[in-house]
Amino acid sequence: MATPTVQGIVLLAHGSRDPRWREPIEAVAARTRALSPEAQVCCAYLELAEPDLRTAAAALVDEGARAIRVVPLFLGMGKHAREDIPRQLDALRAEWPALAFTLAPTVGESPQVIDLLARIAVEI
Amino acid sequence: MATPTVQGIVLLAHGSRDPRWREPIEAVAARTRALSPEAQVCCAYLELAEPDLRTAAAALVDEGARAIRVVPLFLGMGKHAREDIPRQLDALRAEWPALAFTLAPTVGESPQVIDLLARIAVEI
Image 1 (cartoon, rainbow over the protein chains, first blue to last red):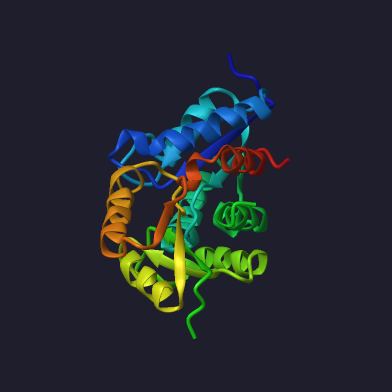
Image 2: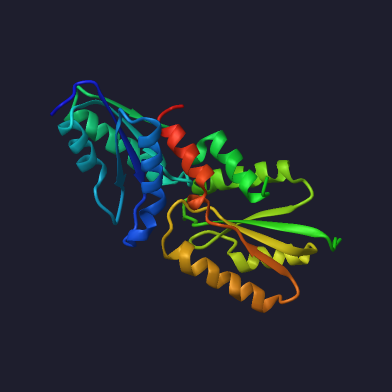
């Protein structure tokens, strides 16, 4: 049954034909659900894995989400992160103009992520 | 001038033709150098960018590194992380048997990374 106040979160990763590639992404989704049990959380992939962002967003809309936050789980800041994902967000906004779509910064640009990866590198 | 006790750290990422892709990886390297100024830190790439792991390791050996830690900066756990990188480490060990090579866990498997990405996703 639709719940008008549902917050949707899409964890958007690159994708791979290899099903095990997705395991860490799905682990982030599980942890996100634990931290925010009221949110509807799903994974989506740009390439080589299902669902794509539009399919994931449509499922969240069907579940009653009125606000959807897309979180790009990319370490690199290439064309996917800089151009393709913002363009996909524009397409979502055009398709569902009454919904609030938010594009989070790409995680590779997060100072917290950069610091944690460096701490892992030096085994702090 | 070679310094026998140098610890080398290679931040090993996927790589891309797009030079801006590497910016977060280079930011991790800069932060790693800040946290561990005594270490020799460099980036290396599996594909589409230079240097590759062998070239990066050879440079560290030339700089006097006797122990080299390779840190895979991959979020997905696909064939690259599970098979290709361990095989490349085997090749390094065969080429420089007197050196100590350590392969760190892939960062996408780190519970700390998974937790931080989930916290970013829910904006905690």
